[in-house]
Image 1 (tube, helix red, strand yellow):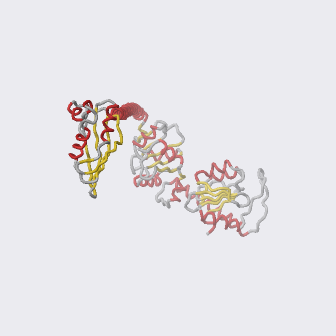
Image 2 (cartoon, rainbow, N blue to C red):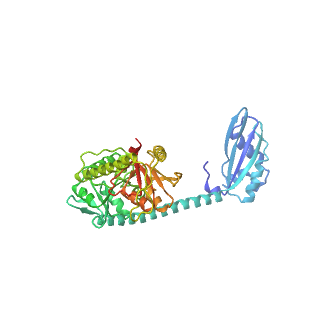
Image 3 (cartoon, one colour):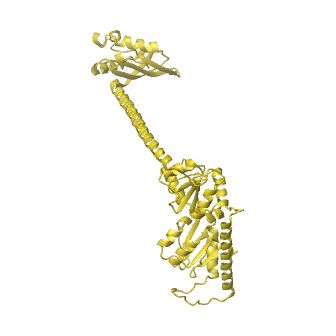
Amino acid sequence: MVIDPSTTKYLIKAKIKADGIIEKSDVVGAIFGQTEGLLGDELDLRELQRSARVGRIEVELDSKNGKSDGVLTLPTSLDKVETVILAAAFESIDRVGPCKATIHVDEVEDVRVSRRKQVIERAKKLLNDVMEKSKTDSESIAENVRQAVQVEEITSYGHDHCPAGPNINDSDAVIIVEGRRDVLNLLKYGIKNVIAVGGTNVPRTVVDLSKEKITTVFVDGDRGGELILRELLQVADVDFIARAPQTREVEEIPQKLIMKSLKNKIPREQYMDMYNIKIEGRNGDEKRQDNGERQSQRGRKEFFQKKKEQPPRKEEEQPGETAEEPVITTEKQKHYETILTEISGSLKAVLLDESGKEIRTIPVRELTDEIKKGDNVSAVVFDGIITQRLLDIANNKNVREIVGIKLGNVVKMPKSVKVLTKNDFQ
């Protein structure tokens, strides 16, 4: 409904019901006819319209089953008292055309209050737009400065001119990513020991660097990231693997996801075992590691074979040892095998006390920290690879038995810790 602003201070809103079919013209005629002379010359509706103190009467009707109902509105520029008198006069109408009818005033609305609310709401929106624009401008300035600093910090490393952070030479560890934009994103959050390979053709500079430092590969969570990862596993000495969330790219994820991905990195051997990755054509260093692992496994298996052939006996205590070397019973082995089968593929670890009772189940990535904190852990069964670091920590915390999927590159086997792998139960 279009209302002339010059005639509007208040808006009379009313409902009308009639026992018959009526038209808009019938309603308007009834209002003018039945209020004429009712309120005196000062509030005569025709005179008020001529002087533009009231606007047009707007009527909307709906007829069903031989009856009509609808709404009517009348804008006025009268004062409050005069407006409500006029509204009350509407309710005195009892016929419209040939039909009985009733008019009930629902509301006399102060249009200025409504306009004031509109002004306030609009002002709020405009203010939010101004503040958002100012914030965006400020962020743009900060982002431009930050990017300029990043561009200054990013360097070209080695003969292959690989994009890298400024701390590559000074740090004991490096993070290998896919491209220059990945390097820039990590630099944004203060990670400066990062270098990019620039594609699936891994530069010799990166390969050589991976042999000298603790290396984490951090790639996208898509098919491209998987291809680059497999290439790096073939040619470089990778220690840990981190992946961006599935379908996400390292260059666009925020700081929280970057830190979470790096925190949840997985040792190379465990990652390859989890995803059944077989690498052919490894370099010489890796082959030597495999040979060492196989020798360690053969020695460990010969040790257990001899233990099975000989009756249990007490070992002579070595200097510095206070407890006899425990003997793993068949019942315990069956218990461990059951647990290992239950957690297979879950990347979980089960901590057991001296009686074989479960203490708690935790993610494998928390295992070393949990062993360091605990004092009553006697055995650990976990879905992962037994590493030298895990055995050293277990030995220091008097853990008697470690059961895992397989044995990693273990050089020194603690005498006080018994080791079992999946193969020992087959």
